[in-house]
Length: 437
Image 1 (spheres, rainbow, N blue to C red):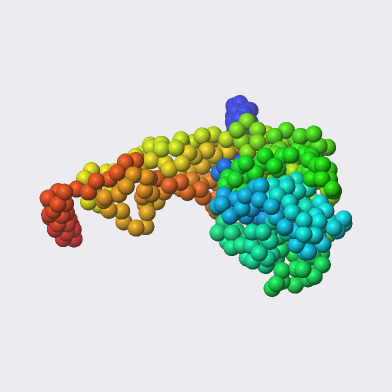
Image 2 (tube, rainbow, N blue to C red):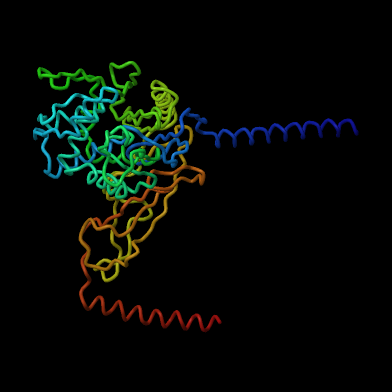
C-alpha cells in the first residue's frame, strides 16, 4: 500500500516539474522575443524611420565627436534655403579665399576650387553630399549666411527646433577647428569640434529624409565626376561603401553620411529601405573605416530579421471606442474625431502585442464653433514594456485626433436649455449626496 502511494507521489511530482518547466520556458520565450544584439562601437542606434521607433540603442545619448556627419545639418539648411526661394540649384556661387584655402588641402576631403571662381549650388552640393568636400561646404555656407559663424547659429537653432538634446555645432564641416587654418568661426576656439549623440544624429537624419526626400537622389550616387570637362575634373567616389556597386554594398541602402577624424573615429549615419520599411542607423566611433559598415550591416540584418511595419490606422481613420468627443456648446454634443495622419509601427515578428493606447483631451477646453481638421485630442501610443527605449521623440508617439467636419454652435435657445438642465442636475446631485451622508 505504501509502495503504491510512493509511486503515485513520484508521478505527481514528475508531472508538476514538467508543467513548471513548460511555464518557465514559455515565459522565457515571450520575454526574449527579439534576440540580443551587441554593436562594437562607442555609440549606436537603429530606428524605424517613419515612426521614430527605436529598435536598438547603445550609449545613444552620449555626446561624441561626429566629424563629417555634421554635413547632414548643412545639407538640411541648403535644402531649406532652396525650398524658401533664397537659393537656386543653378545659382552661381563665388569662391572666397577661405573656401579656396580649405579646398586645396589634399589631406582633407575636397574638390579643388579656384579662388574667385564660380560654381553652381548643385555642383557644390553634390561635392559636399557625395565626396564630403569641405571647401564646397564652406562656399555654400557663406552663400546662405554670409559668414560661417552666422550659419553655425542657424545649425544650433535648428537642432533646438528639432528637439535635439545633446549637440554642439562650432563649424559647418565637422572638421576640428584647428584644421580651418585660422578661419574658425567667431566665438569658437581652435581646439573645438562638433558633437552630437547617436539619438540626435538619428533625429537629424529622420528630418532630412522626411522634409526633403529628394535629397536621397544625390545621397545614393556612388560615383560622379566634379566639373567634368572643366579645368580641374575630380572623380568622386562616395564614402558610403554600402551603396550599390561599392565594396560593402547592401541592398536598399540609399544614404546617408560618413565621418572620420582622429577625435571622432569612424562614424556612419545610414539609411536603407526594404519591403516598405525604412531604417535609419547611426554608428559612432567604430573600430575602423570598414568596421562602421560591418556594424551597420549587423544593425540592418537585425532590424529586417526581427521587425516588420504594420499599418495601424490610415489617415482620417476613426479609432474604435473613441469615435467621438464631447464639445461645449456644439449643435451635436458628441463630435466625431479622426486621425490626422496615417499610423504605422514596427512590430516584432515574434510578438505582435507590444503597444498600448491612451487618450488625452486638449488642455484647452474646446468650444463650438470649430473648423474641420482642428486637433481636439491626442492618441498616445506607447510600449507595454516599461524597459522599451520608446521613440526618438520620447517614451510615446502622439497622434493628433482632429474634427472630421465643421462643428456648428448650438442656437441660443438650445444652449440656454442645456444650462438650465445642467443647473437642476447639479442641485439633484447635491441633494443625493446629502441624503447619502
